[in-house]
Image (cartoon, rainbow, N blue to C red):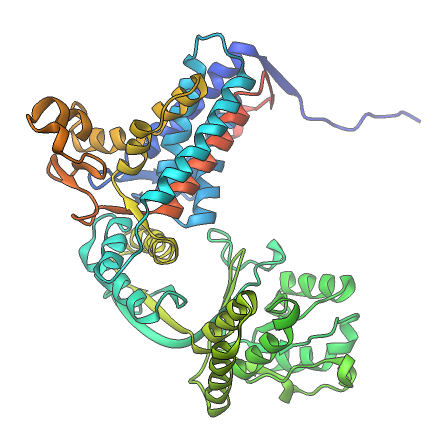
Length: 535
Protein backbone atom coordinates (compact mmCIF):
# COMPACT_ATOMS: atom_id res chain seq x y z
CA UNK A 1 0.00 0.00 0.00
CA UNK A 2 1.45 3.35 -1.02
CA UNK A 3 1.85 5.95 1.74
CA UNK A 4 1.12 9.55 0.72
CA UNK A 5 2.25 12.60 2.62
CA UNK A 6 -0.52 15.08 3.43
CA UNK A 7 -0.61 18.06 1.09
CA UNK A 8 1.10 21.12 2.58
CA UNK A 9 1.21 24.80 1.70
CA UNK A 10 4.57 25.79 0.23
CA UNK A 11 6.24 28.66 2.11
CA UNK A 12 8.58 31.47 1.11
CA UNK A 13 11.07 32.96 3.59
CA UNK A 14 12.41 36.51 3.79
CA UNK A 15 15.08 37.63 6.27
CA UNK A 16 16.61 40.81 7.72
CA UNK A 17 16.54 43.99 5.65
CA UNK A 18 14.78 42.29 2.73
CA UNK A 19 11.90 41.25 4.99
CA UNK A 20 11.71 44.66 6.70
CA UNK A 21 11.76 46.54 3.39
CA UNK A 22 8.91 44.46 1.97
CA UNK A 23 6.88 44.84 5.16
CA UNK A 24 7.46 48.61 5.04
CA UNK A 25 6.42 48.71 1.36
CA UNK A 26 3.07 47.16 2.31
CA UNK A 27 2.68 49.54 5.24
CA UNK A 28 3.41 52.51 2.94
CA UNK A 29 0.80 51.44 0.37
CA UNK A 30 -1.94 50.97 2.93
CA UNK A 31 -1.11 54.20 4.76
CA UNK A 32 -1.06 56.27 1.56
CA UNK A 33 -4.61 55.10 0.81
CA UNK A 34 -5.91 55.66 4.34
CA UNK A 35 -4.13 58.91 5.28
CA UNK A 36 -5.76 60.83 2.42
CA UNK A 37 -9.08 60.67 4.34
CA UNK A 38 -7.76 62.37 7.51
CA UNK A 39 -9.04 65.76 8.63
CA UNK A 40 -11.63 68.31 7.57
CA UNK A 41 -10.15 68.49 4.06
CA UNK A 42 -9.55 64.75 3.73
CA UNK A 43 -10.47 63.17 0.41
CA UNK A 44 -12.87 60.34 -0.41
CA UNK A 45 -11.58 56.98 -1.64
CA UNK A 46 -13.29 54.92 -4.35
CA UNK A 47 -12.70 51.18 -4.12
CA UNK A 48 -14.08 48.12 -5.89
CA UNK A 49 -15.99 45.65 -3.72
CA UNK A 50 -15.98 41.84 -4.06
CA UNK A 51 -18.76 42.04 -6.68
CA UNK A 52 -16.89 44.61 -8.78
CA UNK A 53 -19.10 47.52 -7.73
CA UNK A 54 -17.56 50.93 -6.95
CA UNK A 55 -17.94 52.13 -3.35
CA UNK A 56 -17.19 55.69 -2.17
CA UNK A 57 -16.07 56.22 1.43
CA UNK A 58 -14.18 58.59 3.69
CA UNK A 59 -14.03 56.08 6.55
CA UNK A 60 -10.46 55.04 7.35
CA UNK A 61 -11.19 51.51 8.54
CA UNK A 62 -13.37 50.79 5.49
CA UNK A 63 -10.53 51.88 3.21
CA UNK A 64 -8.04 49.76 5.16
CA UNK A 65 -10.22 46.65 5.06
CA UNK A 66 -10.62 46.96 1.28
CA UNK A 67 -6.84 46.70 0.70
CA UNK A 68 -5.38 43.27 -0.15
CA UNK A 69 -1.93 43.39 -1.77
CA UNK A 70 -0.67 40.92 -4.37
CA UNK A 71 2.78 40.48 -2.78
CA UNK A 72 2.34 38.19 0.27
CA UNK A 73 4.97 39.87 2.45
CA UNK A 74 3.73 43.36 1.62
CA UNK A 75 0.22 42.14 2.43
CA UNK A 76 1.41 40.93 5.85
CA UNK A 77 2.70 44.46 6.54
CA UNK A 78 -0.60 46.00 5.44
CA UNK A 79 -2.60 43.48 7.49
CA UNK A 80 -0.62 44.21 10.66
CA UNK A 81 -1.33 47.93 10.29
CA UNK A 82 -5.02 47.12 9.74
CA UNK A 83 -4.90 45.51 13.18
CA UNK A 84 -4.06 48.87 14.77
CA UNK A 85 -7.03 50.43 12.97
CA UNK A 86 -9.55 47.68 13.78
CA UNK A 87 -8.48 47.47 17.44
CA UNK A 88 -8.89 51.24 17.75
CA UNK A 89 -12.38 51.25 16.26
CA UNK A 90 -13.31 48.30 18.49
CA UNK A 91 -12.14 50.10 21.63
CA UNK A 92 -13.10 53.70 20.90
CA UNK A 93 -15.31 53.58 17.81
CA UNK A 94 -13.20 56.05 15.83
CA UNK A 95 -9.57 57.08 15.29
CA UNK A 96 -8.71 54.43 12.71
CA UNK A 97 -6.95 56.81 10.32
CA UNK A 98 -5.02 58.42 13.18
CA UNK A 99 -3.89 54.97 14.39
CA UNK A 100 -2.73 54.06 10.87
CA UNK A 101 -0.80 57.31 10.41
CA UNK A 102 0.82 56.99 13.86
CA UNK A 103 1.84 53.34 13.30
CA UNK A 104 3.34 54.18 9.91
CA UNK A 105 5.29 57.15 11.24
CA UNK A 106 6.59 55.20 14.23
CA UNK A 107 7.68 52.26 12.05
CA UNK A 108 9.38 54.61 9.60
CA UNK A 109 11.28 56.39 12.40
CA UNK A 110 12.48 53.12 13.94
CA UNK A 111 13.60 51.72 10.57
CA UNK A 112 15.49 54.95 9.79
CA UNK A 113 17.22 54.98 13.19
CA UNK A 114 21.03 54.76 12.85
CA UNK A 115 22.05 55.29 16.47
CA UNK A 116 23.76 52.96 18.92
CA UNK A 117 20.78 51.92 21.05
CA UNK A 118 19.38 48.40 20.60
CA UNK A 119 15.80 47.66 19.55
CA UNK A 120 15.12 46.60 23.15
CA UNK A 121 16.36 49.99 24.43
CA UNK A 122 14.30 51.81 21.80
CA UNK A 123 11.15 49.88 22.79
CA UNK A 124 11.76 50.62 26.49
CA UNK A 125 12.13 54.33 25.71
CA UNK A 126 8.94 54.33 23.63
CA UNK A 127 7.07 52.60 26.47
CA UNK A 128 8.19 55.17 29.06
CA UNK A 129 7.44 58.07 26.72
CA UNK A 130 3.97 56.62 26.06
CA UNK A 131 3.21 56.79 29.79
CA UNK A 132 4.19 60.48 29.91
CA UNK A 133 2.04 61.26 26.87
CA UNK A 134 -0.99 59.64 28.52
CA UNK A 135 -0.45 61.76 31.65
CA UNK A 136 -0.21 64.90 29.49
CA UNK A 137 -3.44 64.01 27.64
CA UNK A 138 -5.29 63.33 30.90
CA UNK A 139 -4.14 66.71 32.27
CA UNK A 140 -5.31 68.42 29.06
CA UNK A 141 -8.76 66.80 28.90
CA UNK A 142 -11.95 68.85 29.28
CA UNK A 143 -15.42 67.55 30.27
CA UNK A 144 -17.97 67.75 27.45
CA UNK A 145 -20.97 70.04 27.83
CA UNK A 146 -23.95 71.07 25.70
CA UNK A 147 -22.84 72.44 22.31
CA UNK A 148 -19.54 70.54 22.47
CA UNK A 149 -21.49 67.32 21.91
CA UNK A 150 -22.76 68.55 18.55
CA UNK A 151 -19.28 69.71 17.65
CA UNK A 152 -17.74 66.29 18.37
CA UNK A 153 -20.44 64.67 16.23
CA UNK A 154 -19.97 67.29 13.49
CA UNK A 155 -16.22 66.61 13.26
CA UNK A 156 -16.56 62.82 13.52
CA UNK A 157 -19.02 62.65 10.61
CA UNK A 158 -16.58 64.66 8.48
CA UNK A 159 -17.95 68.15 9.05
CA UNK A 160 -21.55 67.40 8.09
CA UNK A 161 -23.47 70.01 10.10
CA UNK A 162 -26.92 68.43 9.58
CA UNK A 163 -25.80 64.99 10.78
CA UNK A 164 -23.78 66.50 13.63
CA UNK A 165 -26.83 68.45 14.80
CA UNK A 166 -29.04 65.33 14.86
CA UNK A 167 -26.47 63.14 16.62
CA UNK A 168 -25.74 65.85 19.19
CA UNK A 169 -29.47 66.29 19.81
CA UNK A 170 -29.86 62.54 20.36
CA UNK A 171 -27.06 62.38 22.94
CA UNK A 172 -28.32 65.51 24.73
CA UNK A 173 -31.69 63.85 25.28
CA UNK A 174 -30.53 60.35 26.28
CA UNK A 175 -27.79 61.68 28.59
CA UNK A 176 -24.44 60.27 29.65
CA UNK A 177 -25.77 56.79 30.34
CA UNK A 178 -28.19 56.63 27.41
CA UNK A 179 -27.78 54.78 24.14
CA UNK A 180 -27.94 56.00 20.54
CA UNK A 181 -28.30 53.47 17.71
CA UNK A 182 -28.37 53.73 13.93
CA UNK A 183 -30.87 52.23 11.47
CA UNK A 184 -31.68 52.74 7.80
CA UNK A 185 -34.54 55.15 7.14
CA UNK A 186 -37.59 54.17 5.10
CA UNK A 187 -37.19 57.44 3.19
CA UNK A 188 -34.28 59.50 1.89
CA UNK A 189 -34.52 61.75 4.95
CA UNK A 190 -32.43 61.35 8.12
CA UNK A 191 -34.34 61.75 11.40
CA UNK A 192 -34.11 60.93 15.12
CA UNK A 193 -36.51 58.79 17.17
CA UNK A 194 -36.52 58.16 20.93
CA UNK A 195 -37.72 54.97 22.62
CA UNK A 196 -37.36 53.38 26.06
CA UNK A 197 -34.37 51.06 26.24
CA UNK A 198 -31.77 49.31 28.34
CA UNK A 199 -28.13 48.32 27.96
CA UNK A 200 -26.18 45.83 30.06
CA UNK A 201 -22.62 44.47 30.01
CA UNK A 202 -22.93 41.16 28.22
CA UNK A 203 -21.45 40.80 24.74
CA UNK A 204 -21.21 38.29 21.90
CA UNK A 205 -20.33 34.76 23.02
CA UNK A 206 -19.89 33.21 19.58
CA UNK A 207 -19.12 34.46 16.08
CA UNK A 208 -21.60 31.85 14.80
CA UNK A 209 -24.44 33.97 16.19
CA UNK A 210 -23.42 37.20 14.41
CA UNK A 211 -26.02 38.58 11.99
CA UNK A 212 -23.91 41.47 10.63
CA UNK A 213 -20.35 40.30 10.01
CA UNK A 214 -19.13 43.73 8.92
CA UNK A 215 -20.05 45.25 12.30
CA UNK A 216 -19.62 42.08 14.37
CA UNK A 217 -23.08 42.35 15.95
CA UNK A 218 -26.18 40.22 16.41
CA UNK A 219 -29.50 41.99 15.82
CA UNK A 220 -32.87 40.39 16.58
CA UNK A 221 -36.19 42.06 15.67
CA UNK A 222 -39.11 41.57 18.10
CA UNK A 223 -37.44 38.68 19.93
CA UNK A 224 -38.88 36.73 22.83
CA UNK A 225 -36.68 36.89 25.94
CA UNK A 226 -35.95 33.86 28.15
CA UNK A 227 -34.18 34.58 31.47
CA UNK A 228 -32.85 31.61 33.46
CA UNK A 229 -30.63 32.35 36.48
CA UNK A 230 -29.67 28.69 37.02
CA UNK A 231 -27.57 26.76 34.44
CA UNK A 232 -29.36 25.06 31.51
CA UNK A 233 -27.79 21.57 31.37
CA UNK A 234 -29.67 20.02 28.44
CA UNK A 235 -31.58 21.23 25.37
CA UNK A 236 -34.49 18.96 26.31
CA UNK A 237 -35.15 21.10 29.40
CA UNK A 238 -36.21 24.08 27.26
CA UNK A 239 -37.74 22.08 24.38
CA UNK A 240 -41.27 23.42 24.90
CA UNK A 241 -40.05 27.03 24.75
CA UNK A 242 -38.07 26.41 21.56
CA UNK A 243 -41.07 24.74 19.88
CA UNK A 244 -43.29 27.72 20.82
CA UNK A 245 -40.76 30.23 19.44
CA UNK A 246 -40.30 28.31 16.18
CA UNK A 247 -44.07 27.92 15.74
CA UNK A 248 -44.54 31.69 16.12
CA UNK A 249 -41.61 32.41 13.75
CA UNK A 250 -39.94 34.78 16.20
CA UNK A 251 -36.28 35.09 17.25
CA UNK A 252 -35.24 34.22 20.80
CA UNK A 253 -32.82 36.01 23.13
CA UNK A 254 -31.62 33.68 25.90
CA UNK A 255 -30.14 35.39 28.96
CA UNK A 256 -28.62 32.48 30.85
CA UNK A 257 -25.62 30.18 31.36
CA UNK A 258 -25.75 27.20 28.99
CA UNK A 259 -23.69 24.05 29.25
CA UNK A 260 -21.93 22.57 26.21
CA UNK A 261 -24.72 20.34 24.84
CA UNK A 262 -27.56 22.92 24.63
CA UNK A 263 -25.09 25.56 23.48
CA UNK A 264 -23.84 23.44 20.55
CA UNK A 265 -27.39 22.40 19.60
CA UNK A 266 -28.68 25.99 19.49
CA UNK A 267 -25.67 27.27 17.52
CA UNK A 268 -26.04 24.44 14.97
CA UNK A 269 -29.78 25.06 14.53
CA UNK A 270 -29.18 28.81 14.23
CA UNK A 271 -26.64 28.15 11.44
CA UNK A 272 -29.14 25.91 9.62
CA UNK A 273 -31.88 28.54 9.88
CA UNK A 274 -34.17 26.40 12.04
CA UNK A 275 -34.26 29.10 14.71
CA UNK A 276 -32.91 32.64 15.05
CA UNK A 277 -31.29 32.87 18.47
CA UNK A 278 -28.76 34.82 20.51
CA UNK A 279 -27.30 33.81 23.87
CA UNK A 280 -25.84 36.28 26.39
CA UNK A 281 -24.70 36.10 29.99
CA UNK A 282 -26.77 37.26 32.94
CA UNK A 283 -26.22 40.91 33.96
CA UNK A 284 -24.72 42.10 37.25
CA UNK A 285 -21.95 40.95 39.56
CA UNK A 286 -21.83 39.46 43.06
CA UNK A 287 -24.13 41.39 45.43
CA UNK A 288 -26.02 43.19 42.64
CA UNK A 289 -26.50 40.20 40.31
CA UNK A 290 -29.87 39.03 41.64
CA UNK A 291 -31.33 42.56 41.62
CA UNK A 292 -29.98 43.27 38.12
CA UNK A 293 -31.56 40.08 36.77
CA UNK A 294 -34.89 41.04 38.33
CA UNK A 295 -34.59 44.57 36.86
CA UNK A 296 -34.10 43.06 33.40
CA UNK A 297 -37.09 40.76 33.88
CA UNK A 298 -39.34 43.69 34.84
CA UNK A 299 -38.19 45.74 31.84
CA UNK A 300 -38.74 42.91 29.35
CA UNK A 301 -41.85 41.40 30.92
CA UNK A 302 -40.12 38.05 31.46
CA UNK A 303 -40.26 35.79 34.51
CA UNK A 304 -36.91 34.72 36.00
CA UNK A 305 -36.57 30.91 36.08
CA UNK A 306 -34.37 29.65 38.93
CA UNK A 307 -34.28 25.95 39.81
CA UNK A 308 -32.44 26.75 43.03
CA UNK A 309 -35.64 28.49 44.20
CA UNK A 310 -37.94 25.62 43.21
CA UNK A 311 -38.68 26.33 39.53
CA UNK A 312 -38.58 23.33 37.17
CA UNK A 313 -37.19 23.92 33.68
CA UNK A 314 -39.12 20.92 32.37
CA UNK A 315 -42.40 22.57 33.35
CA UNK A 316 -41.87 26.13 32.13
CA UNK A 317 -44.54 27.58 29.83
CA UNK A 318 -44.43 30.31 27.14
CA UNK A 319 -45.96 32.81 29.59
CA UNK A 320 -42.53 33.04 31.28
CA UNK A 321 -41.16 34.74 28.15
CA UNK A 322 -40.75 38.48 27.82
CA UNK A 323 -40.50 40.41 24.56
CA UNK A 324 -38.67 43.51 23.30
CA UNK A 325 -38.84 45.53 20.09
CA UNK A 326 -35.20 44.85 19.22
CA UNK A 327 -31.98 43.49 20.71
CA UNK A 328 -28.49 44.43 19.51
CA UNK A 329 -25.40 42.65 20.89
CA UNK A 330 -21.81 43.68 20.13
CA UNK A 331 -18.54 42.38 21.60
CA UNK A 332 -19.16 44.13 24.95
CA UNK A 333 -22.83 44.95 25.53
CA UNK A 334 -26.43 44.06 24.74
CA UNK A 335 -28.93 46.85 24.03
CA UNK A 336 -32.69 46.27 24.20
CA UNK A 337 -35.48 48.50 22.92
CA UNK A 338 -38.36 47.95 25.33
CA UNK A 339 -41.97 49.08 25.48
CA UNK A 340 -43.06 51.99 27.67
CA UNK A 341 -42.14 51.70 31.35
CA UNK A 342 -44.98 50.25 33.45
CA UNK A 343 -45.99 50.94 37.05
CA UNK A 344 -43.75 48.13 38.34
CA UNK A 345 -40.72 49.78 36.71
CA UNK A 346 -41.66 53.16 38.24
CA UNK A 347 -41.83 51.61 41.73
CA UNK A 348 -38.51 49.87 41.14
CA UNK A 349 -36.90 53.20 40.18
CA UNK A 350 -38.18 54.86 43.40
CA UNK A 351 -36.77 51.97 45.45
CA UNK A 352 -33.33 52.17 43.81
CA UNK A 353 -33.19 55.97 44.18
CA UNK A 354 -33.88 55.60 47.91
CA UNK A 355 -31.13 52.99 48.25
CA UNK A 356 -28.65 55.28 46.46
CA UNK A 357 -29.48 58.10 48.86
CA UNK A 358 -28.94 55.88 51.93
CA UNK A 359 -25.90 53.90 50.71
CA UNK A 360 -22.55 54.92 52.25
CA UNK A 361 -20.30 52.36 50.53
CA UNK A 362 -18.85 53.95 47.37
CA UNK A 363 -18.62 50.68 45.40
CA UNK A 364 -22.20 49.62 46.19
CA UNK A 365 -23.46 53.13 45.46
CA UNK A 366 -21.87 53.00 42.00
CA UNK A 367 -23.52 49.63 41.30
CA UNK A 368 -26.89 51.04 42.39
CA UNK A 369 -26.39 53.99 40.04
CA UNK A 370 -25.71 51.53 37.21
CA UNK A 371 -28.99 49.77 38.03
CA UNK A 372 -30.83 53.11 38.00
CA UNK A 373 -29.30 53.91 34.62
CA UNK A 374 -30.57 50.58 33.29
CA UNK A 375 -34.09 51.16 34.63
CA UNK A 376 -34.39 54.75 33.39
CA UNK A 377 -32.55 54.29 30.10
CA UNK A 378 -33.61 55.94 26.87
CA UNK A 379 -32.54 54.90 23.39
CA UNK A 380 -32.13 57.39 20.56
CA UNK A 381 -32.33 55.97 17.04
CA UNK A 382 -30.76 57.83 14.11
CA UNK A 383 -32.69 56.75 11.00
CA UNK A 384 -30.22 57.40 8.16
CA UNK A 385 -31.65 58.19 4.73
CA UNK A 386 -30.02 58.88 1.35
CA UNK A 387 -30.85 59.11 -2.36
CA UNK A 388 -28.82 56.04 -3.41
CA UNK A 389 -27.33 52.88 -1.91
CA UNK A 390 -23.80 54.17 -2.49
CA UNK A 391 -24.56 57.42 -0.65
CA UNK A 392 -26.39 55.51 2.11
CA UNK A 393 -23.42 53.24 2.85
CA UNK A 394 -21.00 56.17 2.95
CA UNK A 395 -23.35 58.15 5.21
CA UNK A 396 -23.87 55.19 7.56
CA UNK A 397 -20.09 54.77 7.91
CA UNK A 398 -19.80 58.41 8.98
CA UNK A 399 -22.74 58.24 11.38
CA UNK A 400 -21.36 55.09 13.01
CA UNK A 401 -17.98 56.81 13.61
CA UNK A 402 -19.72 59.88 15.01
CA UNK A 403 -21.93 57.87 17.39
CA UNK A 404 -18.93 56.10 18.92
CA UNK A 405 -16.83 59.26 19.14
CA UNK A 406 -19.61 61.31 20.73
CA UNK A 407 -20.32 58.61 23.31
CA UNK A 408 -16.61 58.41 24.13
CA UNK A 409 -16.36 62.20 24.50
CA UNK A 410 -19.41 62.29 26.75
CA UNK A 411 -17.95 59.67 29.07
CA UNK A 412 -14.25 60.65 29.21
CA UNK A 413 -13.93 64.20 27.92
CA UNK A 414 -12.17 65.85 24.98
CA UNK A 415 -8.78 67.30 23.99
CA UNK A 416 -7.84 69.85 21.28
CA UNK A 417 -8.45 68.30 17.85
CA UNK A 418 -6.68 68.51 14.52
CA UNK A 419 -3.70 66.54 15.87
CA UNK A 420 -2.88 69.43 18.24
CA UNK A 421 -3.11 67.45 21.52
CA UNK A 422 -0.38 65.03 20.42
CA UNK A 423 1.62 67.85 18.79
CA UNK A 424 1.60 69.76 22.09
CA UNK A 425 2.65 66.62 23.98
CA UNK A 426 5.64 66.25 21.65
CA UNK A 427 6.66 69.86 22.39
CA UNK A 428 6.18 69.73 26.17
CA UNK A 429 7.71 66.34 27.03
CA UNK A 430 11.48 66.19 27.36
CA UNK A 431 13.19 63.52 25.23
CA UNK A 432 15.23 61.43 27.68
CA UNK A 433 16.65 58.98 25.12
CA UNK A 434 16.35 57.92 21.47
CA UNK A 435 13.14 55.94 22.12
CA UNK A 436 11.55 59.16 23.41
CA UNK A 437 12.78 61.09 20.34
CA UNK A 438 11.36 58.50 17.94
CA UNK A 439 7.89 58.49 19.52
CA UNK A 440 7.71 62.26 20.10
CA UNK A 441 8.51 62.81 16.44
CA UNK A 442 5.95 60.19 15.34
CA UNK A 443 3.04 61.71 17.29
CA UNK A 444 3.37 64.93 15.27
CA UNK A 445 2.35 63.02 12.12
CA UNK A 446 -1.47 63.34 12.44
CA UNK A 447 -1.15 67.15 12.71
CA UNK A 448 1.06 67.41 9.61
CA UNK A 449 -1.03 64.89 7.64
CA UNK A 450 -4.19 66.95 8.23
CA UNK A 451 -2.42 70.10 6.99
CA UNK A 452 -0.95 68.25 4.01
CA UNK A 453 -4.42 67.04 2.98
CA UNK A 454 -5.66 70.64 3.21
CA UNK A 455 -2.76 72.05 1.17
CA UNK A 456 -0.96 73.74 4.09
CA UNK A 457 2.04 71.40 4.35
CA UNK A 458 4.59 74.22 4.86
CA UNK A 459 2.69 75.95 7.67
CA UNK A 460 4.48 76.74 10.95
CA UNK A 461 3.48 74.94 14.11
CA UNK A 462 1.62 77.38 16.42
CA UNK A 463 4.59 77.39 18.83
CA UNK A 464 7.05 78.30 16.06
CA UNK A 465 4.65 80.86 14.58
CA UNK A 466 4.23 82.68 17.88
CA UNK A 467 7.94 82.55 18.76
CA UNK A 468 9.16 83.71 15.34
CA UNK A 469 6.39 86.00 14.12
CA UNK A 470 5.12 87.74 17.25
CA UNK A 471 7.06 90.32 19.25
CA UNK A 472 5.23 89.52 22.48
CA UNK A 473 5.79 85.77 22.08
CA UNK A 474 6.63 85.30 25.79
CA UNK A 475 3.14 86.46 26.66
CA UNK A 476 1.28 84.30 24.14
CA UNK A 477 -0.17 80.86 24.93
CA UNK A 478 0.47 78.33 22.16
CA UNK A 479 -0.81 75.16 23.83
CA UNK A 480 -4.18 74.21 22.38
CA UNK A 481 -3.64 76.46 19.35
CA UNK A 482 -3.61 74.84 15.91
CA UNK A 483 -4.32 75.43 12.25
CA UNK A 484 -7.93 75.22 11.10
CA UNK A 485 -7.60 73.05 7.98
CA UNK A 486 -10.65 74.68 6.37
CA UNK A 487 -9.00 78.13 6.16
CA UNK A 488 -5.34 77.83 7.17
CA UNK A 489 -5.87 80.15 10.17
CA UNK A 490 -4.29 79.79 13.62
CA UNK A 491 -7.04 79.23 16.20
CA UNK A 492 -7.65 77.95 19.70
CA UNK A 493 -8.98 74.52 18.82
CA UNK A 494 -11.33 73.99 21.77
CA UNK A 495 -12.82 77.49 21.51
CA UNK A 496 -13.45 76.90 17.79
CA UNK A 497 -15.02 73.49 18.46
CA UNK A 498 -12.20 71.54 16.80
CA UNK A 499 -11.97 68.74 19.35
CA UNK A 500 -11.32 65.00 19.70
CA UNK A 501 -12.51 62.52 22.35
CA UNK A 502 -9.54 61.74 24.60
CA UNK A 503 -10.34 58.00 24.57
CA UNK A 504 -10.04 57.94 20.76
CA UNK A 505 -6.64 59.66 20.83
CA UNK A 506 -5.35 57.34 23.56
CA UNK A 507 -6.63 54.18 21.84
CA UNK A 508 -5.08 55.19 18.50
CA UNK A 509 -1.71 55.85 20.15
CA UNK A 510 -1.74 52.62 22.18
CA UNK A 511 -2.58 50.40 19.22
CA UNK A 512 -0.12 52.13 16.89
CA UNK A 513 2.70 51.58 19.40
CA UNK A 514 1.69 47.96 19.98
CA UNK A 515 1.71 47.05 16.28
CA UNK A 516 4.83 49.04 15.35
CA UNK A 517 7.00 47.70 18.19
CA UNK A 518 5.86 44.14 17.40
CA UNK A 519 6.78 44.45 13.71
CA UNK A 520 10.29 45.80 14.36
CA UNK A 521 11.03 42.83 16.62
CA UNK A 522 10.72 40.42 13.66
CA UNK A 523 13.71 39.33 11.58
CA UNK A 524 12.09 36.61 9.46
CA UNK A 525 8.84 36.59 7.48
CA UNK A 526 7.33 33.24 6.41
CA UNK A 527 4.59 33.63 3.80
CA UNK A 528 2.48 31.31 1.66
CA UNK A 529 3.56 30.97 -1.97
CA UNK A 530 0.73 32.27 -4.17
CA UNK A 531 -0.55 31.17 -7.54
CA UNK A 532 -1.53 34.32 -9.40
CA UNK A 533 -3.89 32.60 -11.85
CA UNK A 534 -6.89 32.95 -9.55
CA UNK A 535 -6.23 36.57 -8.61
